[in-house]
Image (cartoon, rainbow, N blue to C red; front, side, top):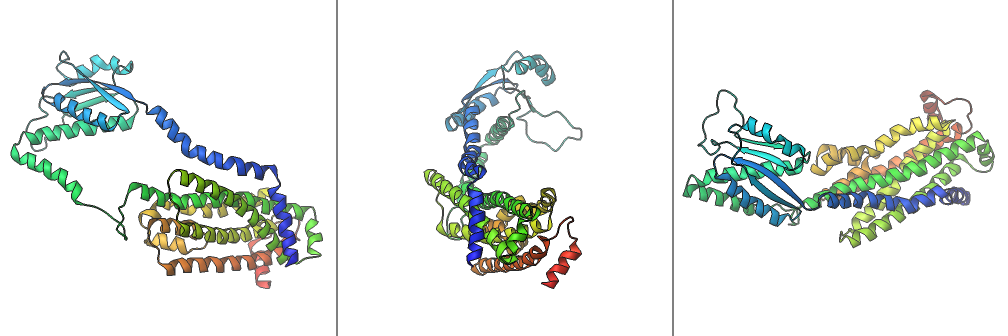
Length: 424
C-alpha cells in the first residue's frame, strides 16, 4: 500500500505544480463567471430604454385609441421600452401603396414599424373565403428584433379581439371576465405542495449540465495527463524500471489515485467558488445534492480514469490516444445532449435507463434528482452499478496494463486485448 501512495503522491505533485494547473484554478472560475454574467450585462446594455415609433394607418378610426391605452399599460410594466404613435390620415388608399411610399422611413430607422388597419377588420366574422386575400392588418418592420416585433403583433391581435368582443354587448364582457378569472383559478404545485416556477425548472435543468461540465473538464485535463504520463514513461522505458520494483496493479492504481486527487482539488476549488457565488445570488444549495454530487463524481472519475489508463497502456503516441479518447468523451457528454428530455420526463424510460447505465449515470441521475424525487432504491442501485462497473473496469485495465505497457512498435488488436483479459 505504501508504494501505491508513493506513486500517487508523485503523480499528484507532478500535476498540481504545473503552471497550467495553477492557471486553470485561477482563470477557469473567472471565465465561467464571465460566461454567466457577461451576457446579462450585454443584454442590459442592449435593452436600454428605447422609443419605438409606429406609423399607423387606421381606416376604422377605432383601433388606435385602444392600441394607445394598451401600449401605455405595457410601458408601465416594462420601463425599458416606450411607444410613440404617428397617426397618418394622408396615406394612400391601398396597403401596398402605403408601404411603398413610406418605406424610406423604415430604411432610415425613423420608424420601428409601419402598421395598416383595413376598414373591414372589425366586420363580423364570416366563413373562410375561397380565394386567399391579403391580411386585414399588415405590419412591416425594418429591425431584426424578432422579440419586439412579435410582442407588437400579439398586442395588436389582443386589441382587435377585445374590440370585436365589446361590440357584441354584455355577453362579451362576461366572456372577457371569465377569461381573466380562469387564469387565476388553476395552480400547479409539486409533490410537497410547492408552486412550480420557471426558475425551479431552469435550476433542475442546469444541475446535470453543471455536473457534466465539471466532470468533463477534470477528466479532460487529468485524464489527458494520465494517458500522456503512461505513454511518456512507456516510450522512455521508465515504465520497465518502475515495474521492476512494483506490480502493474500498484502502478496503475497509484497513478489513478494521484491524478484523481488532482482532479478533486480542482473540483473543490470550483465548488467553493460556486457555493460563494450562489450564496451571494440567494440561490440555496441543498446539502444532500452536494453529497450526491461528490459521490457520483468520485465513482465517475474512477470509472473513466481506469478506462483511460488502459487506453494509454496500449498506445504508443498521443495521436493514437486522442483517437481512442474521443468516443469516451462523447459518452461522457451524452447526458448533456438529452438533458432536456430527462428534465421534462424524469421518470420516463430514457431517463431511468441512462441513470442506471454506469457511463451516463452521474449526469442523468443528478438531472433527475433536480427535477423530481427519485426513489431511494433507484439511487442505491445506480451507485451500486457504478461501483461494480468501476471495480470491473479496474480489473480489466490491470490485465491490459500489465502487458500493454511493455509492448512497443504497434498497437494491439481487439482480439489480442480480449486474449489478455481472459488470460488474467
